[in-house]
Image 1 (cartoon, one colour):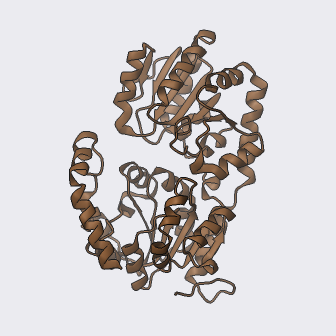
Image 2 (image 1 turned 30 degrees about the vertical axis):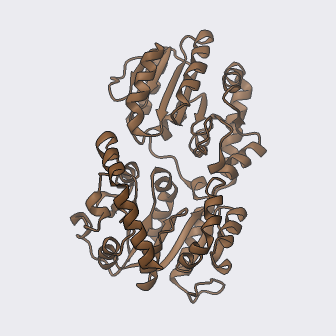
Image 3 (image 1 turned 135 degrees about the vertical axis):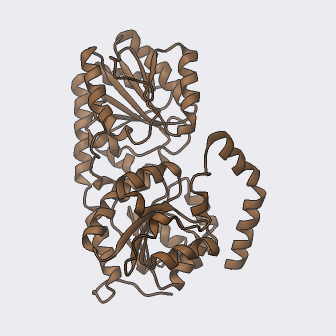
Length: 434
């Protein structure tokens, strides 16, 4: 199976080489960390040689944020182990290095034995922790063969991914036998994991780690922007985060309506993907909307326009300035993004009606009247309604913060389960291998 899989993967990569080269040259994607992805272990990882390591894999920014408290807990609980973190994306790598230290972070290798083996040899991990659902057959097989315990934490199978997993369940079944423990976000995720081949005895429900993530220390821009807003008596403040292509025109037309009633309103617009910053700047210029680029902004007063957040890692804290927060990827069929960050700051949250990737979180907030869900046509009306009714807007934000607090505790449950996995003698924990 693994030889056939590796051959097909190699053929697929060879066929798609022109695409990857185009993406590297046009958008600067995928080139970062290429040597590390091919198995060249960076010298910064080789300075410390512990008895063994705990290897945490977090694909991108969202997963890095989700495991932040868990990584801190693992370092406290297992000081004799070196805790290292791998990512797949460049943005995830940047954030992980800032949070966990450059010498403990690297790019996840491609799923070939020649790329994986150097990391297993150097790190000698006793435990590998994979965030959400990264099921790489060769990697899991080689980890199992090296007698490394493997746990998938914060596991979920979204509505959009579910059909694909079901079609692949006969292939997945053998791969998932190499995982010792699955910690699912919800009962539904646990059922779906079992249906696609995870041994039912190894599946537990631990909740969502993202509910436990503490707000990061605000970067300097938050205080600077707050001061600039106060100096110009600007407001209301609308923060639109993680926006996608085809969403910005909808948001900016709605903002033009807002400006008609609130001439000093400010929108902070944060596109999801850095390679789109220039395109969104061009759109703002084409629409004739006054705007400032974060990368060029010198702290001058802002009012009656858009601050284009062409930066990484600042959005989460800027939600603290929002009267209303919109979370993107939801007015278009992209599955939505996480609403927890604005909820941490008690912002009134609006999302579109495409939130399949976060169905449980959005559903929970909806049940507690802690979020507004709307389609593209109704979005301008819902936005104006919230801006026009201060008490209703504040109450919505308060309910969002309360809902978030009510769901905390997943990190401790995850820590307990991982500790038990490293100590198989503890009663009641299933760690047997197939």
